[in-house]
Length: 138
Image (cartoon, rainbow, N blue to C red; front, side):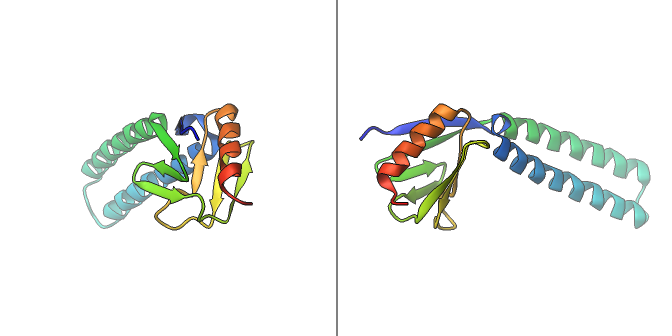
């Protein structure tokens, strides 16, 4: 059986984009909340706002890099790999396909395993579904 490799960018996938945007907004809110706390505690306003602006700049750069970075999935034999995570597809209970959001959720995957597969295009999604149907019993 051939191996399958595909790439996605969080910017091109609606589900991944939403997840990363929420994470980045949480970090920004925490930073501005901390700045407001410092100002309320009597810290100098000018220095606090400069620090908050620099923090926001770095978080914005992080967001641009994170959303645009290509991420790679790899299916080899009965395993799917994504960076340090590896999942044995024979051990999962099944999977759900969301074609509109271009996502496959693996049911029963452990905490340190790949649980969600994201795709940029529908062709890769269909190929992965066919591949998973051969390996996983729904």
